[in-house]
Length: 266
Image 1: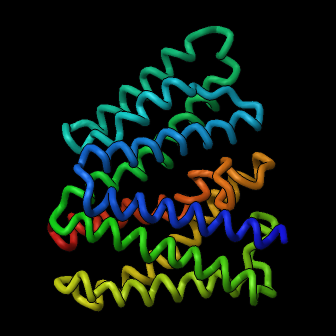
Image 2: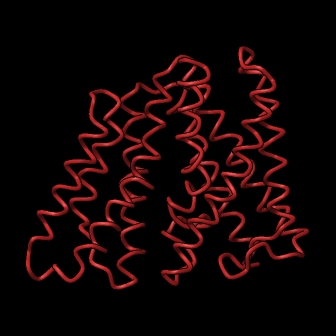
């Protein structure tokens, strides 16, 4: 009964998030899409900061959240480098307080890592959305990665017999990882149906790269949670937290952007 209830919650919240994502990608004004990205970035950052604080580290939470909120809008003015530079400067100034000097290096590094890992990586979705065929590419990356996650979850639950990396994520299995990779790869090939201008060979390579990066992104976030001693990063019923939802996307989104701007020339 407990597993059934969790599955119902997982499917219900997944359906809600899918509905919001489809509307935001294809039908909403750009400001609504930007607000969704901002929400994911800010909640994801708070979850990450909570993980770090559980280890006893001091985090410059408000500095991190302020500059994290600026990164998704950096597409509308030249500013990523400026934002991160000023963020570092503010972190140093904040740590000039003598009571914080013993954790100055760790505090600055952890806060800046959160800005890069959560805010900057996820904010590339706003850049992709404004490119030619941008909504289709946002849909593409979310579809193939999250469908791969679903394949890994359900196949792992049913057939998982060999643990993948038990000291990082005891519930992940080799069978689930293979299933996730296969689903991501096949859906990348199938995306030719709505991305007809993209060579099939490109979609095949992207499917392989993203099938691997998604697994690594998932394990990377699991490593952070394991270090902090928690099972989930947040409290979304059946799904965990925003970081649990976005972990497999974080390493893939910037790669999509640079593929589009360097290889596709968009």
